[in-house]
Structures are given as C-alpha cells and as structure tokens.
Length: 166
Image 1 (cartoon, rainbow, N blue to C red):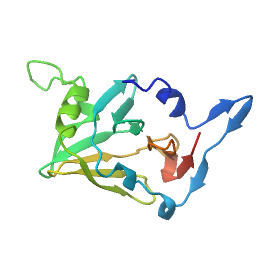
Image 2: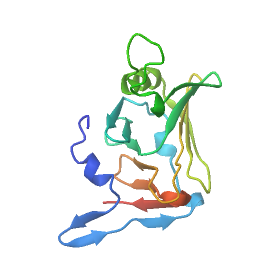
Image 3: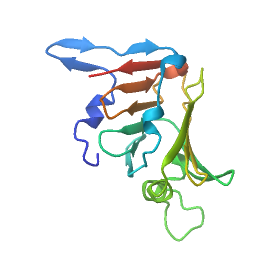
Image 4: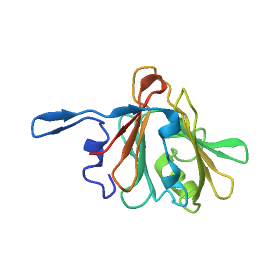
C-alpha cells in the first residue's frame, strides 16, 4: 500500500496488543474534527481487491473507503469507483486509480464536510473538484481516516462514527 506497510492492519479498527483487544470509542458528530485534511492533497489513490480504495494524503494521513465514491467536476460525475475496469466503448479499460490520482493530486483540499447520521464524507478541492465517499450499508464499515498524529476515525454501518488511537 504505497509506503504504508502497517496501514491495512490499522484500518481494521480493532487491534490486538499483548493479548488485549482495543476497541474504538463511539463519538458524537460535533466531536469529530477532520480539519487536518484542509491544505493537503491526495498524493496517490490505490485499490486492493475486492473493494478497498485508499486515498493517501501525504505522510501518515489517509482515507480508506470500502464503499462507493465519486469525483464531481463542474457539477457532474467525472469518475467513480464503479468505473474501475469498465470500458464504456473506450479503447482501454478505465484505471480509476490512475484517473483519480490525476484528477485530485494537483489540487489541495479546501473544505471537509461530514453528513450527520449517514457519515457521507464530502471533500472539496481548490478548483471546484469534490470527492464524495458515500457509505451504503447499515452493517459494514464505510470508510476510515487516519490523521498524521495516528488518530483514526471509522464510519461504522448505519452512520455511527468511532475514534481510535493506536
């Protein structure tokens, strides 16, 4: 995973340390601060089968999505996770990792919004792009985010958010 060897293990939200299990704690939406993303850029987008998308935000900062996402440009869908591997009559299949990196990397994040109740994550970029990460499940985790200090946020099924620091 692009220079983050322990990232996949940390994204699980539950870790075993010396035979103890650490669980993330539930937090209320007003207590969630994602402003650490502002000013950062997506440096790389990766995909791990079957459905793990990672948006790397520089050193030790990331978002991992196990749910649909899309990039909006000029009010229209420019690219989505569902486009990956599709051909749509084009000469080659769409590589959504390369296309998303090309769209997002040149711009820095200008604002982050979290929709209360559903945990939809909206990330606005300078220049008018928007990355929308939209959890679809009432049971499965939709996305996780890790800030440079190591604090992690987990969007659980049904829209609950948990916070965890390893």
